[in-house]
Image 1 (cartoon, rainbow, N blue to C red):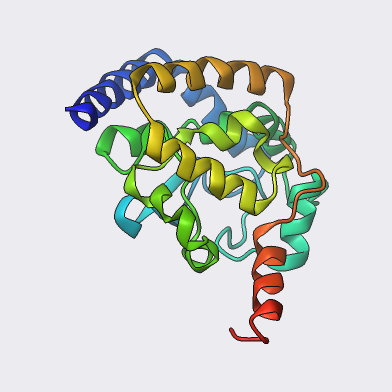
Image 2 (image 1 turned 45 degrees about the vertical axis):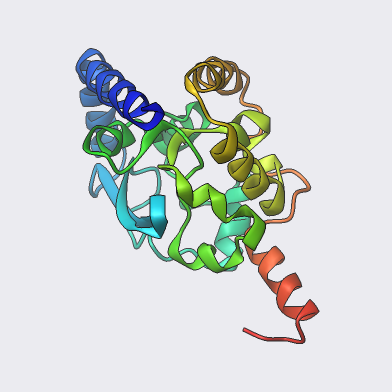
Length: 215
């Protein structure tokens, strides 16, 4: 019953917001197209509920290359907020999280939920500790507990621990509180770029070293 109510809220909420924000979405699409050549949207493989893969949608915020290919150096640049591949429109979209709005469609079709753990890349699944695998018991979300607590300023371990905590305790009023908190986080820009937290690649390398260099 709890899952059915959550899904009904997702369908109603995402459908309504898509209709209301249609003019804004169209304006953003035009801005992206005029700002740099290439597609307006990009799709990227992510892992969601039950470790099932789907294609997440975002407004393109980088120069048109291969959004699926992010090497270690460029990922660190993204975390620090100085990636030269980010377009002028992309900087605004990322700062305001408007680049995530196309995921309302992912929510409407059932790939995602309004609130839940952020969907991870396929290669990140193996870096989720066993005691945090509960994060895959719920649909990934547009926002979640980790995003409210600090987004990229959190370490990888802190993020997945928050994800698992949410999965074990989610409910209607909890989701509503997280949505309200998200507006505050987006307005203040808290955690949009990384702080001192260890990212997932560093966490993976640390675990491999502890396990004797196993891959």
